[in-house]
Length: 114
Image (cartoon, rainbow, N blue to C red; front, side, top):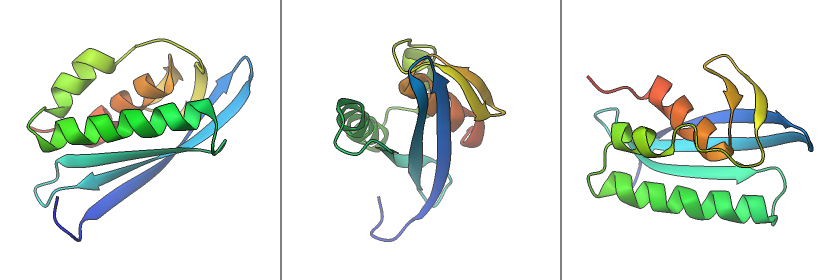
């Protein structure tokens, strides 16, 4: 990734049985429009969920930077289910089976490559 790059930040919300979970997905973008890095920040800073999301995003970023395509990540991670899961406020992802599911399906909608 270049030293200075464009990015997109998206606020996500999952309404789970245990309450509302808010998080932010920030995607660093290569000059050609491809995603090259992902950051996920949960509103419960320091929680297990926040730690997992951060580590997963680092691994996804490394994969994107070493040639794994977004399509490959979507194929592996879309519809993976674990808590929190539930309805969302996002029109593109009306129901998320997990934050991982939400993230890759949202990215698939916003960073489609020809």
